[in-house]
Length: 115
DNA sequence: GCAGTGACGGATA
DNA sequence: GTATCCGCCACTG
Image (cartoon, rainbow, N blue to C red; front, side, top):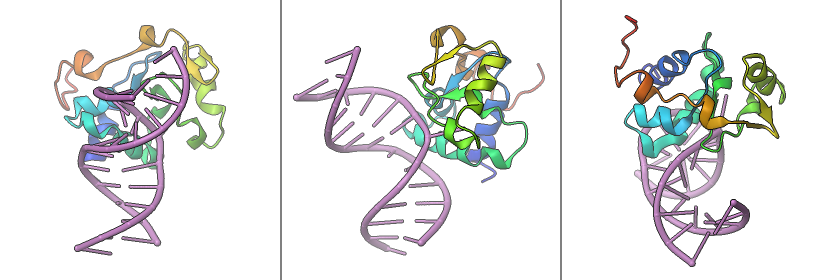
């Protein structure tokens, strides 16, 4: 729990305001690209940890697949729109424009919060 | 120890 | 582009 989960949380917490990423991107960053499910599963437990902007994590299609886990099915969309991310039909519009890849933005630097 | 499941993704048809 | 299947790793029953 302090291994894989912590990794996912670290990456998710690095997601800047108004940006979003995908489970696969995080998984790939964690060298577990084949196990994108694990990321999503870890996110399921993310609500146990504070400061985890899980709403900024969507699936490859930019779809708010996990919105149902926020307590309110519309909460996730509300937060995204509140951050300037337009959401239509439970999917992020201009997704590629808001897309944030940890493997690029973090330049493959694991756990380096010096910046 | 085995089987089922999961906030996914990629490949194939 | 859409639909279906399989693989992936970890956890629970």
